[in-house]
Length: 529
Image 1 (cartoon, rainbow, N blue to C red):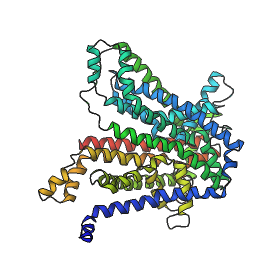
Image 2 (image 1 turned 135 degrees about the vertical axis):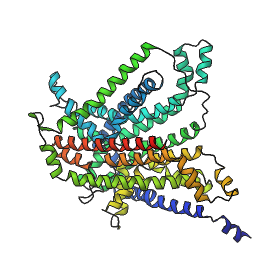
Image 3 (image 1 turned 180 degrees about the vertical axis):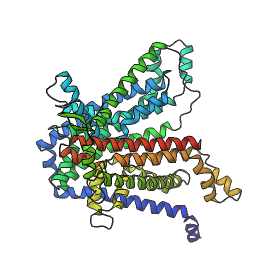
Image 4 (image 1 turned 90 degrees about the vertical axis):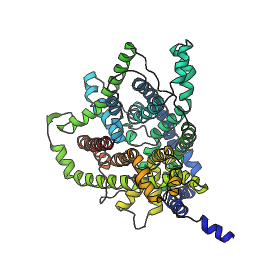
């Protein structure tokens, strides 16, 4: 009897869940364990108490804290301006405010050098002798890099807030300021905690901005990059990787906790935006000013990439474009397109499969698989790349495109997975049961009902994977070779050779490709609507 019961419980979905758990064990858990095991050979206490490490840690905490406060404050203001005012063309503004997410973080640092560096056009215009290097350069670049993510998170929260309590407060005669402290602030408190930690994690684990504009103000990710790439000191890199895991792990836990509590919110009625001309004019001014700041470095890329030699000869020239292409930009662009396209398909397929098994085939094993699936939320790209070097070195996929497909799929997996997981959760949970009673095969129900209802989310997932693969330099920086090098890594190469014109040209290419991808996804969604 017992034996027959076990056989009946061993379903194809259970077998698939076990296989996926093994997959996550091999691709995430074991590589991280292998990386952390190398710390045995390192004097961890001596390294953590060394002056160089303490200084880098202090720099990282100071810059990340300042950038986080500014980013979250700016994101809150912008999300309110778009979501809670009567400004027109909100979709256009929403898109423009998201554009900084389409270029690598190192490009933001380069844009600041072009504008406010020692030879920056604005520095020369204002007569500033010392450029914006060091602490304030890192903070400014990190804000440009991180505030769009914080903005999107807060905008999504405000957009779905229930307007009923505000109607009741208005009837009771509460002033707008009292309504903010009594209703809005308590409503935003838990999501805001997640936004703060997510932004802080983005900034403190990024090495693109500090590498480009930090100067002697060394941060932990830059120190890790220099130790691993420059000195091949994997032990020290592992110690720093362990430190960088801490804020990401806290952010992951908070995101899981707050996400689960927020999904059950019921929106009685949309928030009613009343007419207020002064408020709307102020919103236009704020949004316009921020969009101007966003496009300054982008316009600088466009100009710098097509001048003879900045700032000595500003005449139009295609020499930088030719030089970048001669050094392999065309070939590396093809590499990036191959990687991005493959990962968008592989990652989306894995995310849909995982989400279906965890969200619509719920068992105790589903919860284990769900936790393993969101583990990458807590793993910065640099840490993941270093762990892959140690774990997969000598394997068949090491140094191949397959390695880059795998590391990028894992690096960016958690967010698309949660997107489709939440979408599946909104579809009637009895759908498959009803279909089985009517004699409809489960696969047909998935193919004809579940997936068509999720097509917009799947398109967004593919876009997310593609865009991030095009611009990432963190996870792939330790793993790419000349045979599979993505285009974004040419920016660090040109930065090291002080060829900012070529780096600007490469940044512009990445931006244009990502904009094209976003446009294609928008048209596909509009056509399918």
